Image (cartoon, rainbow, N blue to C red; front, top):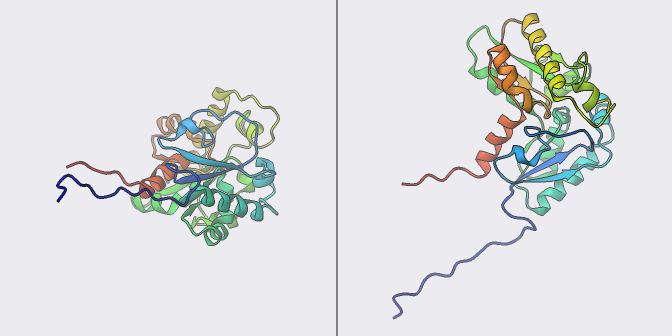
Length: 247
């Protein structure tokens, strides 16, 4: 008898790519994606898979309601799953419109929008307080977008359309460079306007996936918890790869 024999070690196959269980559907854009932006791979403390959906410009998705783009997003999501993704997210909160369709098409968990956090955050707040939403475009965030993410229709919302930099660069694509300080100021001004108009707002959810770089400054300025796509996706990933505790 061989007392030193060991059981065979079997590695499982079936995927093209390993070690990156989260797939991110990206809009087609040219603006800078600084650390903290969803499209900057250094943002994430874990590997991710990216897929750019051609033709899905920010203007088309945000200002035009992503009309005609569902088949392209479904195909891109299915491709990510075929490569090895075990869950799918997107890099635009306005894609909440596709939440149910993508769930049905890919057969893995899907989190299309940071807005999905609104009901969870609301459940944590004291009586009399509400969640407020900051979005890149208040005029484009329709009741349909909110309903698809389970967000009450009367949720306080403020946009950045009136700013000098953030909306112009991300949505109107007026230039490829971005003044980060001006972009931050746009968010701070929108946040202050939100809580001034709705003092009952006790926490804020950032719709736009380009807003996390400014979340800490916003929390400092408003003294309220701020949630964004980073908080959603790190939670999402924790379920895909739970921490293993020693002992």
